[in-house]
Image (tube, rainbow, N blue to C red):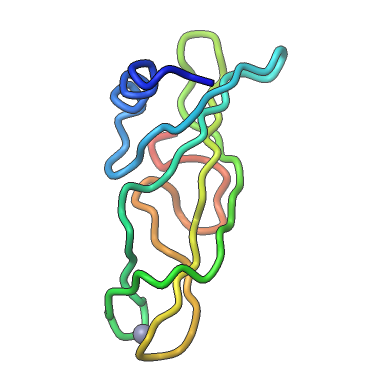
Amino acid sequence: MVKKRAITILTKLLDLKDVKVVGQRLHAGVGIILQTESMKSYSLCPQCGTKSEKLHQNHRYIIKDLPWGEKPVFLEINRRQFKCNKCQKPFSEDLDFVRKKRTYTKRL
Ligand SMILES: [Zn+2]
């Protein structure tokens, strides 16, 4: 369990728009893994632009970010799927800091 204050600092250090750190762990020989969540409760449908807050499913995976000193940093992210009320189709949310189907952040 990580203290709330530490989490706030980690979120500031991470400095990714609309992303907050919810946990962290250090893996020996691997690096730092930060568990993150989007602060947005909605996403826009890429087909029709309708705002959707209807969560379809979570899709968590790990991507690589810039290292902190000598420690490699990985982000556990959740690219959620929302379901558009208008199109009745699920779609993956667009995350500003990572391109789709990539395993590393844009800044890396
Ligand atoms: Zn739509």
